[in-house]
Image (cartoon, rainbow, N blue to C red):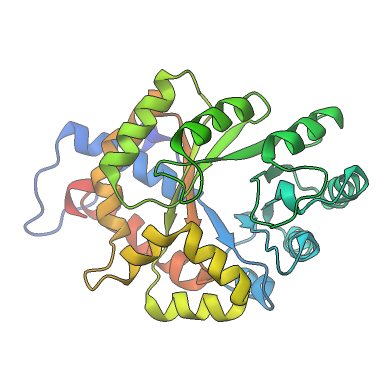
Length: 310
């Protein structure tokens, strides 16, 4: 990740005509965004042809996270993770607790992932209707502890907005129960920068200091969402729509959603040391090329004028 101090001290390119004079706070915020945009994570769905998409549009060494689908099973997640690791990518598979049958299957998953050099995983509870030996993320995290903590990094879910089916009290308590077994958090998509800022401050006041990967969508529109629904299947689509109903509704609004504007407004909070932001977690909906193009464009705009000009 780009060193922020080097960014602040490096020569600035000529500014665009009409660009607003940047404040010191704006330069710090721009440096923070530039650093975060250097090494984001790209989340993909385990569908046919995704490995080729990633290899075609992302440089090796990038971090790619692979979701877990109750319809396709964890085998699809593990197999795609093995393929991507073999192509030279840093891979973070989602190991959904409710989809793991028992201790034997967990041991097999761990062995396969470690054999291809996977160093980190993400552990959500998952959406499977019937659970095996692990009804929630906490139980699987404890099982991983019993296996000697085989992964260097272990991520857990964070909910800046209310979960559609779980009360806020339970999500807060769950995050507290899980944080001692994890090394980082990954937030669900949200579209209100003020809500994220307030939530993050509250989390830090509660003593949860895990670094946060901020989840946000790449450039996605109605056609892309419909395409995703077709690829992941009816059952998974229904679960996705229920789980992300606010997000989908916002993306489908006529005025849409601007990730640039969202980051512009949240940038000062992201720049604070106490926020402990690990990076950006980009939900690509398998629109890998479009997401990478957006990332490069935003970096260019930051280099030209900074966060005040997004």
